[in-house]
Image (cartoon, rainbow, N blue to C red; front, side, top):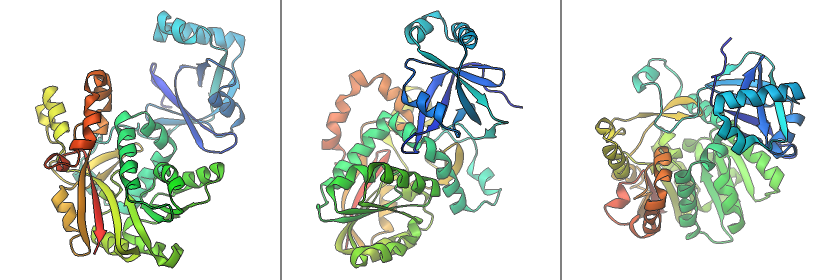
Length: 404
């Protein structure tokens, strides 16, 4: 049986006691006798209460997922855990973080682990496109499976990445400039519904679509928990978006949107363009963002680090990306190349870099380390992100299309 690493952290995934939603927390641990042991500052913290009540808790560590059963550790076990923490992490860490810990939990493994790749950065894939292609996999099924795999930890992963949260906030802010309170919106690639939930107070209704059953399932749980009656989740892929017409009032919406590169994973863009055009009113808007083929801040970041072989890791397409611990192909586009798909049915109104000056999200840790001296870039973004040529050289590009 494979065993977890000797040192590091685990992700403990529990189900919310009321909502049923995944609750993810990253914890230092020790492993003894087929059990993980963790320390908690407060005995009544959410993750502790969830773990003690839930029968479906999981530990994700080192590419392995263990189903676990939680119980309060005995005094003897707690003493052993404290001693092991000192050996693993050092006396200072234990004194600073765990001196006042109220409780130790035992997370007993309920069987052998299943394999799941570590959730890595976007370009942290371990396989090549050629190797993936040789397996003759069905692309749509693999994309759906990858995002299903990512669903439980998706919100946790995004929320811990400053650049990702900045991009999300900026995207929503730009969209709000176009909407009316009476609007019904259509979202393509809603994920777990984070954007839809933030936008929903500003509109009449949102039809939120995604290709992954796991993502749609989590959105349904959020809707129920928060009583969000104006969000309607629908499982459908982008190229078949015309299927949502039967759900729409008058079979049309004034605004459709798609953020965070969902369309990079849609191989049938021509069908998508026709479909989204069919559900948009005349003069309606499609506001969408895709990952760019050339990112100037990525090149500069790698140049500063003397990683000259990585100045343009997006040069050859499609590129393999890591989603939920699985590698899938994704096609990044030059802005002009992407716009060509829309020329027959749409006018291009705006092109905005997301971001123009900040590095890509997978380089977040480097940016955060120096943010105290680089935060001025965030204040300059609204002024420079829409200006040529920077608006075509960001990690992502946001387009405002208007139906002709």
